[in-house]
Length: 406
Image 1: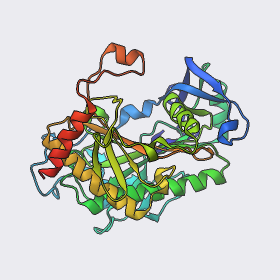
Image 2 (image 1 turned 45 degrees about the horizontal axis):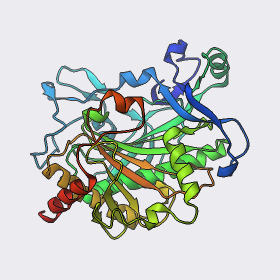
Image 3 (image 1 turned 90 degrees about the vertical axis):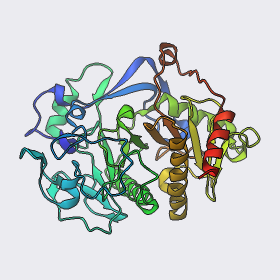
């Protein structure tokens, strides 16, 4: 199922098929009238993507065949000599380790090179590419080890659909992966050039728009899009090169409980968007107020040092961002991450972008979360509540002081 391709030539058993499974104990049918959607059965609640191919992902890369590269090594200023699994893609050639074993064959599907459109998002044949020019900042690829099926032939689909267990369905969607052209370590945003980080955002945005256009042409609709970064091994980052991902769910069967609560909250706000009108505790929780973005410590953190950020313009989706907003976001994130590093706050962090799904007529203000890794207890796992040890106002003050001190 590499690159999300399933056909009668590579299909072996149901154990290799990605499925989406809704939890019957926490899932309800929902009315879609409020979102301007066509009337079909949809759900809200907890679901899981079950994908065996995910276990085949390469885990890091042995540098010079000796040891695993350190995700947290930010001491060096040049990373030109480092090779990882993406080097085969960027250099357009097969990559071997010191023992002569093939690490990556160089085949791929490139959706966007910077903002330039390349392969069709539904291309069914990975291919070798030429060396990517050095002046490129970022590439967006089809994830080789996705959680969803991107392409499946009708014969195999009919065979699979009738054999899946109850509450399960074939998981349909596209997983995008955006990488920097040159190697920069995932945990060292203070060392990554601003234009490279902005380039990652711009390439991801262009790829999402390109993919959505093609999905709509194929009669997919009501599409949830989830852009995110897993920065570090503890939060799911399997590769040391800075990269982002984007899950584009094409199942059209609803949305998770967290997004449902956001959609409902914005619906009840009406014309009084909380994000647009709040002062974040009279400014005591504001960490950074840039030209286009506001960063603050949320009053109800899901982890200690949980930060939120949003564009000052009331826009619905990541793909609505303008180049000036993206450039400012890259600059601000570097400032924030350096301050977190200076305060010795856990380096393994997730960055999540919460967006209005395509096809939903909902008044939504896009926002993001920066969530450092933290071990949580049983009570937190049993419900959506969290227990934090420090007041958000105190954390905000510490981060502001770290930013001011340079």
